[in-house]
Image (spheres, rainbow, N blue to C red):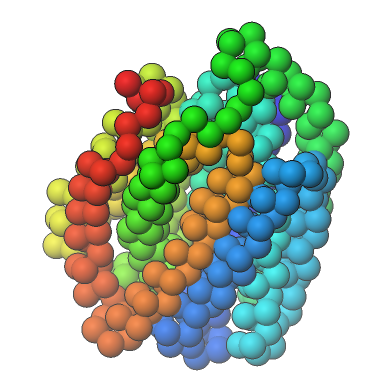
Length: 387
């Protein structure tokens, strides 16, 4: 639990620094006279940079563990954050967010492996703790933007370099524990007579499972990106909220995700990943369909409920993929965290074009149908872990 807690804190710091990027969009939009397409391109650059390296790093660390690689990733994040604070052009903003994305791509694969090693057999709880740190960090970005970045301006982003330095110290300690945790994890599996980890599923089962999980991740991230990148603009345009008020609404929305991932992880250990994926991907549909017509109060309530349910899917999707390919934990961690970045970036760029052409409210009307993709869970192979 100590290792999991420290991993969760490190994930919190990592994702908090990432979340400063979309949280600062209203400030950057005003300062550089950006349109929604340019905002979407910032997200796309950040997400694609974060997606490209993650599967590669995962494959490399599957063969040769690199316990201190997350420290290197945090160095990239620190550099990108400082560059963003003093960027003087749109091109420099893109370079800065790309560096932060690369930092995350190096951080996630090995950190995911460590969470699995420290799970003690309760994978859902372990991934829930690890991910709740990330989601909580993501939720803190808008708060810090409202309290610090808005009143003090773009240069105040450099102050958060302190968080990167703290994360580097924590990750150095975690790296020193990897060999011990790996040995304990292997011994635990041997005691349970599961034998060595090996892919016990047919190639067709693995292929279908990964394709379905990938598409579910894409639709989930498309809806989430409509909030991360454009929710503040939606609130300001439709309800005439100030930037700080809209940022606090975004914080509440993202905080619900932190609670959702932990609940989803715990329930996944009890009732199975398959059921959790069904509930979390298709379940929000009635709420998303109502959202575009709600007033300010019910917009807040509905967005909390939507994200609470939808966020519960990620731990189960990740562990389900690990069960499909149990020998490739680094690859799966890199692939699915990479998908979170890459697919979200593609979605943000597309939604930016829609927002410029048809308005932000139209974006939310179109995205309200995204949970219908949850019907594809029907094609997800049933694994022994889910009965």
